[in-house]
Amino acid sequence: MVQELIFYGAYAYFPLLAAAMLAIINGRRWVRWLSIFVLIPSTLLAWARFVEPAILNVKHTDIILDGATRDAQVIRVAVFADTHFGKFGNAMPMARIVDATNRQEVDLVLVAGDFLYRTELEQISSELWELSRLRAPTYAIFGNHDVGRPGPNHRNAVRDVFEAMDIPLLEDEVEQVEVNGQALVISGVRDLWYAPEVDTRFAADIPADVPHITLAHNPDTAMVVPASFDYDLMVAGHTHGGQIRLPFLYKSAIPCEGDWDKDLHIWRDAGGVDRQVWVTPGTGMVGLPFRFLQPPRLDILTLHLPEVSPSP
Image 1 (cartoon, rainbow, N blue to C red):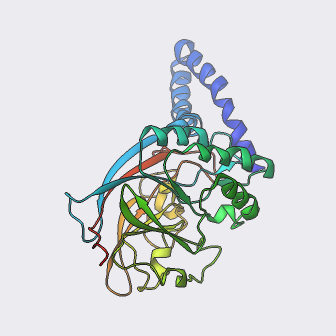
Image 2 (cartoon, rainbow, N blue to C red; image 1 turned 180 degrees about the horizontal axis):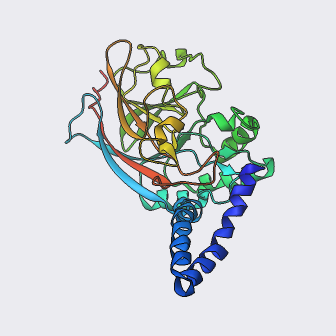
């Protein structure tokens, strides 16, 4: 109820703006200053409600995987997460994300979960089906909201749509693929809030000399997978980059145990190996229908790959 009140109550800003402008133009001096005092914070809230959630930024980043050089072969990977369509009608539409991704002409698309946020069952198929228009091979995982941690558990409905689209939705699974002639391993780990006991036995047969990208919705996963789980890059979401990125305060709202934020992190695992973890800040919202100083974002990663030894 409170969320609905905030979502729809934000429209009161527009008559407030008109009244404040009239007061600034025609009012007494104290009325003008009072109007300005009220207008500044309300305008910031209106920006966070109406403007910033509708901005889709594209960030390009080079990542050199372990054993590679800047001159090594590259693949371009689109990454996004936390679309959270459902409760808040101002969430970034999946259609816009797909169109922006296709314009980038990437080699691969990775979606790090949390498609839903208190979503009605009948919404799921139409919104997710937009992903079928992606031109590059696509792999995805569930996020905590998709499997009822918290909210309704729509795991089966989401999986049915992905199966119909023929897009792999990885749950403790691995796929060996070829991208631009380059052998690659892509795996997906179950969401940490859904399955806190991480089981990586599925990765036992992954070739050691093939670059391995793993999808894990919650970046805390990097802290709990065993050192034997050998990956070159973990791609995660979950943090929203703080979503409402108030300086010095936003990190307290990030629902992680580790000191995760957004972009590239280096995590030293239990075996003393430095692992690269990319955290995308997502495109949607939970809790409040606002994004502030952290617009929705599509990440384009140019991955420099280590050379794969030819088979004997």
